[in-house]
Image 1 (tube, rainbow, N blue to C red):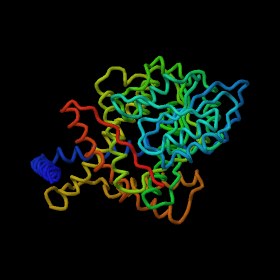
Image 2: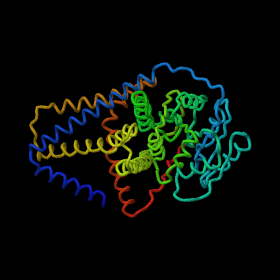
Image 3: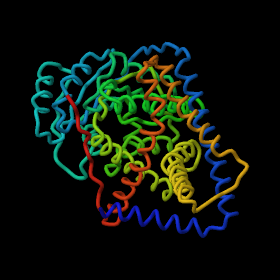
Image 4: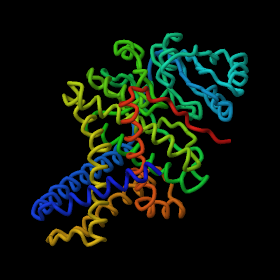
Length: 430
């Protein structure tokens, strides 16, 4: 109830300020934001087209005379529901070099220990590691411990609900070795339970666009890639030079990406390297997961704006992208809502020659076309997926504003109280 009242008060203040705004100023503001929004749409369109080209072009075969040693790190906290299927996929990985798989058991209370222990006894590549308790809790601390007890030339991270395809790892290693300044390589994450309900379908389509096409587009245009938290390979020497993972970053993959890029390294995108991951099947689990993601990215936005050096060289691409997604885009959404409310209550009327309704149509068409393009590249067209694509703008996409406000309030409260934001594990499903 308190949050509702705060939101109402905030909305009322915005409306009062808008009413007393000079009309010319509002026109200029409208024109300025419209131009910025169109620039944003053009940028995303370019990324999508470049990603489609990179995704669909024939990739050269790469073979190494000697394959480097690799350690797979699997953070696991109460993962008994999914761990068996994950380890079944891990032991089937085709890799001609030395490979060790570490299940990093972070104080699990379910049957994670029994499952990991059984695979440890059966397969010489699998190692069940009990991670000592410590603070701050979360994936970053567990991965740092995994780096301490392993010694492979590369390490590859997989979440405990992942089922990589047999060639996923070797494709990452081969791509990493094809670039002199590559710090590793990044694969593609597909949705294992896509057909469960509309929510999982929407998440799957979102990943096809934003986690693959736009990632591939940024790599093709700017030679910059972003770690995805899973199905990602990193050279041990690089992360040692960087001092390991930031234990306070709950979006540890995005934070590490920035530091790797800052040192002048590449992170090639490998669309052919695929892992299958379980996604949230209920709205409650989805909201908790995305709140954690957004809080982690707000931490990165704060570092981007306060720590020198984040707008130099290739870092500029990542930093601007971060601000566009988590600041500028949200500002556009809020502004559109405010204008809508003011118009409904006849508190603001602007006569302008710009066909604003046409711009809205264009944004909807661009968004939906991106979703369709991704499905075309992945050959995932179905009647239900097509219908889902048409309604995502009005449903799934609009959740971003709520999630952002929710995350921002929690983040500001934690900052005010000088509290460490805790790791909120995603619930798994059978």
